Image (cartoon, rainbow, N blue to C red; front, side):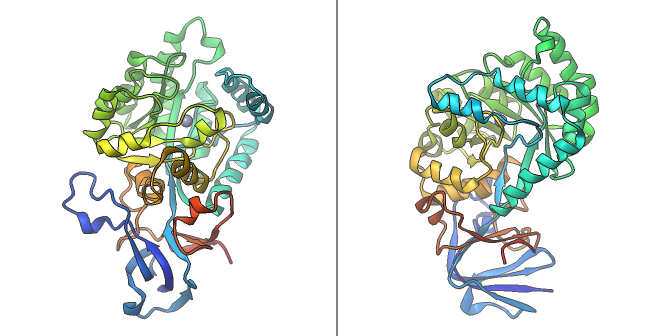
Length: 397
Ligand SMILES: [Zn+2]
């Protein structure tokens, strides 16, 4: 059955087909049609254009002048965990510094939790994302850090998304503190063997205090040999080798990018590696925000994601991240909307989501607002009126 959504005040399409010759990444431009309509058929976008020229369909929905965007693509989230760290957040806001040790409390709680408990928490967060317009999300392991607990983490993640990331190399767990090399061997050996069948991606936290360049390179290489594509937590807490490693390894994305030198910016601008910015982390830790303008002006591809996790940033709201990107990182509303949709799709190497070109998966967000700009103009207000995923209405009346 075909569905025509008409009387759309602003239809954000990010239409990549118009720029087919734009190079390996295709278009990196926000694009929208005013007074628009869209036809969904068989779970795909069949047609977009001016409402006055819309074809007939089996069912008609009147958007009443509201805006429709591609569903958000959240390319960075840590949703398999137990416990919470609200008191740690409150203490940080009261002036105590962010301590990496907090991850350990989540690791301990996750190891102790039953599969059903982890599954229930994961599904609750996934539902929370969907209700806020996120129709594609990535989900990492990384709070198990044993063969058993990492394997069940990726297995649970695979129940809710195809974008599953093996992050055994999140931190060195306490029992391996005297032997971090032994832990890297485990991550590249038995743990990888147990996790690779459920995962698409391998990720590593390349940072002082976590994993150095050579260890991170070994993790990515072992992952690649097991068929996993790379992504890297890079340059979050200081300058370092993370971004260069990501680019050299052909990673889909270097995430955080808070502290970059000129060579890092050049490397991102001249590669297909997406710079994924996670401003919710800087908001929640009171760290300085990444310099989005420097990346955009150099020509890098920028994505926005939540980094939803119980420690450094516990938001699942892409709208909130868009508002931060506009207000705090000086991205235009168009750049931020693109980065939260098409940018995220690039960071996950997905051509079927993040835009509403003909043939795209019919993942849509309808806002109770006339344009995408309201996502930043009305921060904190629940503007999502309805959500469709693969052509099916999954939220909204
Ligand atoms: Zn992360």
